[in-house]
Image: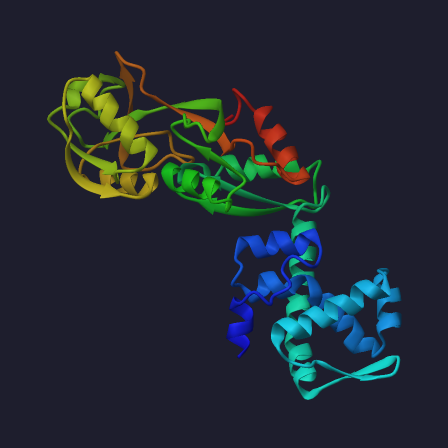
Length: 327
């Protein structure tokens, strides 16, 4: 019976406010689209047990509340109130419905407070992604400096590889990210901030360990340790090796640069890596000559996506760090 009413022409989808119409157009079969705009009226009348008093508290005309209740009961096919002159009381069905409605309205209230709190200029939240190699020194220093002027802004920090972060920018789970290479995509905005020189890292007892500089082509016969495909640094390494005229022979693939450096230290191969935050024993790091062996670091965000005040403030701060992000 209820399902027939819900699917049929008897629903008053076009007889309430424009908000109801907009909700119904999203999914005409959805109870939430049909009922949501009326639930606050229902809960207010249920608490006051009086339509006029409820309308006064809601600051809307009594006729608006009365019509909303009639349509709510009509769409549900259930009497929610017993009328007693100017007062009303809940039926058994009304009491059951009220318990769930109040929980739902409470969730809406909490959700509204949460998003408002996240957007607060003084104490809002920034969802910030960055590369693993920037987690030990660069990002902590950036946040410390930013919070000197914005001490109450909160951060959700996420470390991952570049492509993963770009997808999470697109989904709205991240506001900003520091990534490499700097993305060039129509749906993303990005600004180059700095660059890191890449070095050939070899074990300290390696035949090349006495050198300070090397052409990458001289390592063509070496066994390489690399990040997995999909990582920005892996793409840069593949391109540099191709530019040097060889395709690297890969022994190990990993997910984090310092793990790769550790594998080099125990003699399992060589790697092309950015400088470490802290010098690592057991390895020698050689400067690459003859080609531009660098990775550019940039900040990216979703093009056209509106920023909350704390996100806008942190973005402005990052852009002022151009040329000294890694200092």
